[in-house]
Image (tube, rainbow, N blue to C red):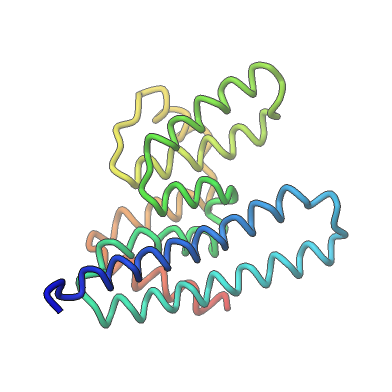
Length: 189
C-alpha cells in the first residue's frame, strides 16, 4: 500500500509496452514476409493487425481518462499507435522507437540507412520514405534537426506525414492531440 500505486503503474506500463512491441513486431514481420504471402492473405493479416492496434488505442484512451498519473507516459504510445493506424509511418521499427521515445536509436537507424543506401543494400525510395519517418519522429520527440535534415523533410514531405505533423503541432495541448487521434481511429474502424 505504501507504493501508492507506483508498482502497479509500472507493471501496467510494462504490459502496455509489451503489447505495443508485439503488435509492431507483427507489422514488421508481415512486411518482411510480404513476398511469401499472396496479396489477399497479406491484406487480411495487415487489416487484423491494424484492428488490434485500434483496440489497443481504445484501451489506452480508457486508461488515460481514468488514471491521470499514466497520461504522460502513455500519450507517446497512443500517438505512435495513431500514426501506425493512420499510415503516417509505414515502418514498424520507427513506430516502436517513437513510442518508446528513443531518439538515440532512431539516429542510429538513420546512420545505418545512410550506409545501406550508399552500398546499394537499400533502395533510394525506401531510404527516402524511412528517413522521412525517422526525421518526423525525431522532430515530434523534440530533437534538434540539422539544416540538411530540415531541407530533406521539406523537399520530400508526403501528404500523410505533413498532416500528422500539422495536426500534432497546431493543436497545442496533448489532450487535443489525443482526442483528434482517437477520433481518427474511430472513423477508420
